[in-house]
Image (tube, rainbow, N blue to C red; front, side, top):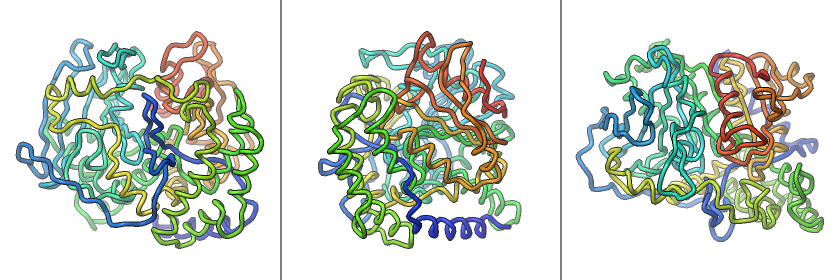
Length: 504
């Protein structure tokens, strides 16, 4: 059966499920920019975390005055000496010009060990509209930002230890990327990333990577990006093999999603559950929980009803209004005075440290042509206008899992904004060839060097792990005697080796 036929069947099935009153599952997404130093991966709009104001015209950004673009080619700075200081490890940063007015920034780090045979892993942060430099410097890159926000330290648990890692600022306009800002849906973003990768992997400096296994890792709004991008890659590969389009086949083998928004109908109730009863402390009083519960269940105009309407053929306006309502009356109020990314801290939490001043200091060294911004509000507005946030990516995730791609989903148990209640409810709603087996499994302790780090399940090539003590950016945290990022490095390494998760 073709992917399009599978997706039509999945969407039809989901519409019936969405209309069923049994769909009171749990959770939400990856957002926000509360005014913490960890300013988040999604803005606050009109005072609402992840707010939206209804559909409007797409924002078209100004083309930045800069050196001439080279459409279809890369502009590269090699071995800048920034961040990765391990002797002999190659790095490169710069732009892939996907058109004369669209330039995507990348930063590539060769594997510290066996780079010629190591797989290639892509990394995308979420937002929508937030920079992947967040992942590079706060989470899993070769170096990590220090608390002074002006210096970095080498990261012994960097994901480029045994993998070649490529950080990509997308959509156009995000982070160090620049150009016309026309992308407003995950599907449009996928097409631009595909075009960028075609350019990158056909460049003589990186063409050897095309034969290596390819992995796609992402977090937060990556719950949309990951399934959509992976499904698009697989569909393009099929079209290439059928001689319907021309291009380089992407050897996609792995998809990883951390604390991600994938299926709002199953994830939003997780805010209610987590706020009242999480592993640490209630976030709000019972009356706030009751008000949110009412906002979820209210007929016709409630959050649940609006998400259903959005995914039952709803217009951009319908989906955008659902985002605004649900985040105004459920996601926002239930956070209380705790940091939405790490509930063990009151808002604002100064950790992880801000990147702005450091990235300004190294901008020219790495070939960046514009001032870095953590989140591009124009790009965010484009997505808010289409209501992409509330449109489910579950059919794409099911398609990717059933296609044989190894998929690992992970979540930090101290994260509210993408809490494990919602993520696990989303997983429970999956219908894949591994779902029945997964549902029968009991959670097992996930240990790292004998230390308890979380709990996990495997079924076929699908795995899920909940990491204890971690916030939204799981690799940025430590727990017990484990070092910062040590637990995340273990599940990343096991997945990249095409292995199920196991304790060590």
